[in-house]
Amino acid sequence: MAIATNQTILIVGGGISGMTAAIEAAEIGKNVILIEKRPFIGGRVSQIYKYFPKLCFPTCGLEINQKRIKQNSGINILTMSQVASVTGSTGDYEVVIKTSPRYINEKCTACGDCATVATSEIDNEFNYNLNKTKSAYLPYSNAYPQRYVIDESVIKTDEGKKIADSCKVGAVDLSMQESETTLKVASIIWATGWQPFDADKIQPYGHDRFDNVISSVEFERMMDPMGPTSGKLVRPSDGRDAKNVAFVQCAGSRDHNYLKHCSRICCMATLKQTTYITDTYEDGKADIYYIDIRAIDRFEDFYQKIKNKDNVNFIKSKVASITEDKKNKNPVLNGVDTEGYHRYANSYDMVVLAVGMQPAMDTSILPKDITINEHGFMENNDNNGGMFAAGCAADALDVNRSVQSATAAALKAVQVVNSQS
Image (tube, rainbow, N blue to C red):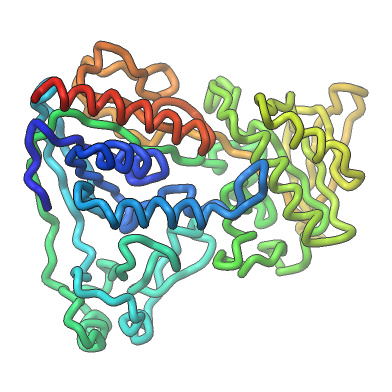
């Protein structure tokens, strides 16, 4: 790894914002260190099946960014790494980084022999724990670095020894330990991204009790051919076709009990996800329960396109509760249509909760003078010195706006470095 100095920019988070900021800064000659807590970079964009409104796949864009990163020697990447502490001031920050062991070194060719001999399974975090993966695993097919990971649970077992013996190139290193690195950097970009609101907390909606009530991020993974159902649109309870699906908007958002803010992407994500149903089944049907639809700027045309579909129905209502029909495990939505003031108890094959975005940043490690708003997002202002927020660390943003935010953060960080010259 390159030596960090007061000419170095540290980027915390390797999602689309962190990757963008790293590329923008490095391609104008700056030294960048990019750290990511997961075993790969790409963030939640790598877990999306399709973008809205074009309904294209994120794969190509991620691969282009990966290629640009690989080709730039000014970008140094530390995966499975997190910031433990930050001290100092603009142009002279000292950052302590803790890196967890992968138990696989740089010799890995991603041949998969370790996974072949692995016998135990762990929850598949990439698929939101909807299925299992081997204890020796590649997070997903296009993961970068293209290197396997061994779960800590098998390190001191006979299975761990078999995994080590299976590797022909000596890439398995079961002696790896957590390491700590101290970096001196001029500026820090926080691109720590977002996490889905925990749908289990919305007790009236039964995500924690009813098999056929799932979250929007779980539904997204389900539709991916590499996902837990191999791209099949089926009910989790019994594997039957899910042809009649309800979407519940603002599940945990715009609610003083949960998230006060609007996450901005939820309406568009649901409009996109209705196409998964109508494209899969000719007789598929989607009902959207909403407070109001927020199709911002250029997304209005996409909203009108979905709205004009005969098999997509919009119901203006804040769903009061979800119950379950014990005979067939159908979720039943209960509430009042606020346009006609009709009570309903509507049954569906499956219900998708459009959960909101909340920041993933650990604010406890930040200096006290950093500005964090009431929603947990870092606000960019002069009080923050040489620290800048990018993407969903700054606000609830879609991919396009996250990239724009990251470019702006990179420019500000570069200006700090230039001031040290």
